[in-house]
Image (cartoon, rainbow, N blue to C red):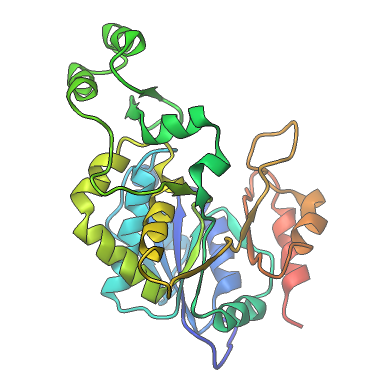
Length: 315
């Protein structure tokens, strides 16, 4: 454990589903006396594999595990379960949300110093959804219903309203009769008028903001959950929309862009980019405000993590 003094506490909340050794590397490189780690392991994964690999007093595997489905509200629920544990344990300072396939691209001194210097800040991608996606994509997220068939990625249907397509989905068994009735009798909307905002679902928020977000969710849980549980890729809208709503009446919440770098723009590859050793220069030359990157996969290329360790090691 690296010892860094006179710095604020940092709580890392991490969602992971595979590669216990990769998760161990992530935690090890970030581990200081100021750090604690709360980890959600997908219920489909064997948590004992992770517990055997990672045994540290400041690493907490939360008990409230959910079946995380890509693009589904279950991703948000897992994050909320992590936040619940952080609040229960009265953590202060910063809460940094990472996946098990993230990795720092700055050394731990730089990360903790940056967060200390910006202790009143919040770092989350936050833009009106019509600046991020086409009208069709926006409508598919906030006006349409997402119904899952299974936990498999993409095994779902997105239906907007009662029309020929939804009738065809019913007749072909793609949606249940109960889901079909929802299309007839319920309009998908939030009771409180909001301006939907979105962005990357990886963020770093100070604990004062976390508390405000949690209070807002507690007061509006039924409305929020009934809406977002049918929202496609709700993890890219949920926290952004809530924080934007809070900012309208609370000017103490200051927001800057996410501290996590993700490459969504490379051609001829699966996005986001899974980095390899050839991407070292791209990663280490990111601006000072980019502290982490995703994503990495040790089955694809572990050498990039070795190279990053050398580049960001504390001299």
